[in-house]
Length: 289
Image (cartoon, rainbow, N blue to C red; front, side, top):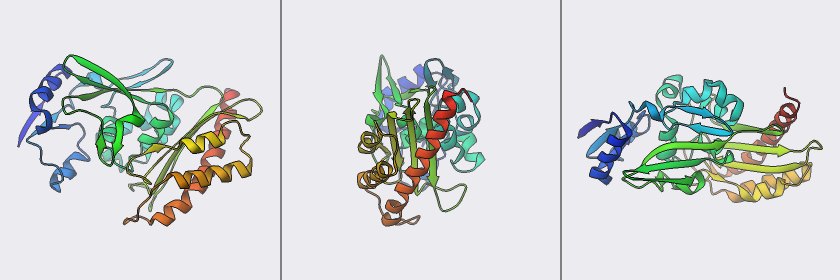
């Protein structure tokens, strides 16, 4: 096993061009090292990128630009994230222990592509786009196209995730991330749900984004639910219909944490709670509170 630690993005890209599938990119390592210990992955080379400070920057302008080496702890505590993407703050707060939060990175969470990745639903409802760089080339891809399956992404072996951009909330928009787990801390989600709603002054939903994790091979946008909510005043019958559509969109499994049936029963109630929280925050944002 060879270990290489890149000192620049260009050096990391050159090594990826040389090594291709033989390399495993290593950032925080909270998932990668466990997978290596279990012999789930057996790379010839670990390519460490933890010293690339240019991938550890946050920029808040019309939208948000988040470096892939930003830790979960930074996501949970940075005031710019809290103002612009509060659901991402809430999701990061639920990731493992504080030790894991200090080490684990948002880029690693995306590239690991776990079905239960907490940071993915908030990024999906924020319309996140990932930047993928290789030597001499760069391309952008919507996050919902980047995730293609369980622990599978559209990243090529010669590419490095070098940026994440997303839409910030605006006045009249509220969002939240809610998670059901077996314990209140350090627990992988049984169901994770992010909702972002924009409402006009009479509480008509003008835009709805809903994303869920831990109920399918990868987190996804529930577009059928969004269509039901948009144009509504979130009447009880509309919320109930949206809950049924959310359950129908999922393909949960039975595992050690919960049954598929339980996950299906939880989802509508979680959605109802999330809608209430979003409405409250949207009203407060419009008033400048």
